[in-house]
Image (cartoon, rainbow, N blue to C red; front, side, top):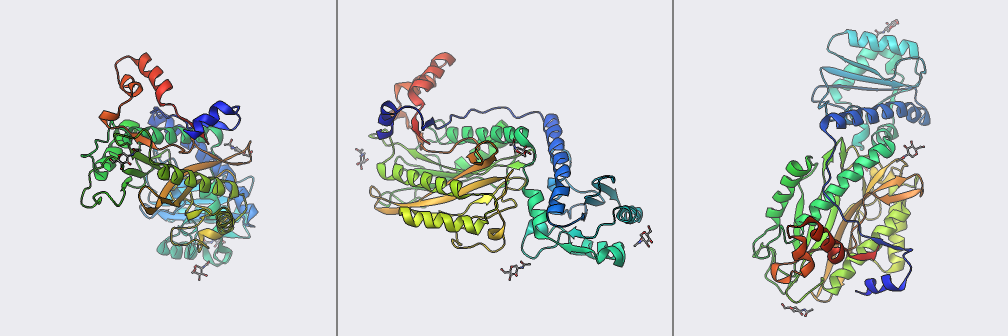
Length: 458
Ligand SMILES: *[C@@H]1O[C@H](CO)[C@@H](O)[C@H](O)[C@H]1NC(C)=O
Ligand SMILES: *[C@@H]1O[C@H](CO)[C@@H](O)[C@H](O)[C@H]1NC(C)=O
Ligand SMILES: *[C@@H]1O[C@H](CO)[C@@H](O)[C@H](O)[C@H]1NC(C)=O
Ligand SMILES: *[C@@H]1O[C@H](CO)[C@@H](O)[C@H](O)[C@H]1NC(C)=O
């Protein structure tokens, strides 16, 4: 309410709509494959610069069907290549005149001869292999495969191999597809938002009937059958309820006055999304959630801004975490920070910024640096006291950001939640909502525009 007053009082400089999402078609699978192949080619073109940056001349990835290297999925189109075949070997290098990568699929000795001949031409002084104690993105060389590779390389080349963590990490982390890939990611994200908005509405939630599990399976079906994507984790729905009400374990059906939470992501074109939003089921006498809950979401938004602004390329994840915790202390904000890179993997390569149980430093991932051409899931929860419930409540939120070349900063992929999704049980329906569900598209669109668009700070 207060914020709507600001809209009237101030020019529209800092105001923005929380974006309204629609379900939108993804490209055909044939087109998706075409896109992915272009992005894979760009990654091939990018790899020599990573090798040079770290003082290497070559990088060998060797694997067998179903025992793929962790970086494999970053080197093929996920729409048409599901696994390695036979023995699959990539040799990336920095020699300008030799085919790059050398990409072999074979299960005979010929493969090793070809590799050897190519190495003779390139004469790399330093060859990277993916072996790392703590970082899965740089540890894709299976033990047996590695033993064989070293024996087949022979002493000359084997003695030039070493592992270098940053190579696997930076190659998997790189979002090389430019505007085209970002556009597809935004499209996926809009579908996630549309799905959450529908799931957290009276169209799907029936107070007194729907359980968290019902809604989880509803989301699974919508992403598979309506949006046409898979996922990298099953969506989870939680119910937060005032302790003065019957407990969720005894009364699992959603009730008026419940706060809803969802953690949900989809997978397509070898990209993954990760989103957490909050919803609220209005009581008969309410037109908005209790102020205590609104304040919790607001505190979550403040934490999101701190993380987004402190994510500076080349800073380590631990460094960002330290800066954010310092800001939180200064501003008197409580909560947990547990943000992670997202891309070819849901929990992808790059800088981890906290974990739920680690708020000082994260071994391994905390020492990785924030990169450019890179995406992160800003995942966290604010903790505030909710007077209406008489408890300290966590407000978990998650929203993905991408590196924007123009603003030189990390920006929200589709937007970020500043408003609760509202479930308005039947008795609560306003004229606007009733019209929006009517038959006439024009009337419905107008009603949605007038009645349901809500303006908030972003
Ligand atoms: C891996 O992590 C362990 C435990 O944090 C640490 O002792 C070890 O030095 C790390 N290894 C490498 C290669 O970084
Ligand atoms: C690699 O090829 C060179 C000649 O090109 C040869 O001298 C050497 O024995 C070969 N090594 C292996 C392990 O086959
Ligand atoms: C950002 O700039 C880099 C370097 O010029 C370019 O490779 C990349 O495609 C750009 N990213 C986007 C999303 O346009
Ligand atoms: C709405 O009704 C509930 C009881 O159902 C009551 O606890 C609450 O204070 C009321 N809220 C408002 C805003 O009147």
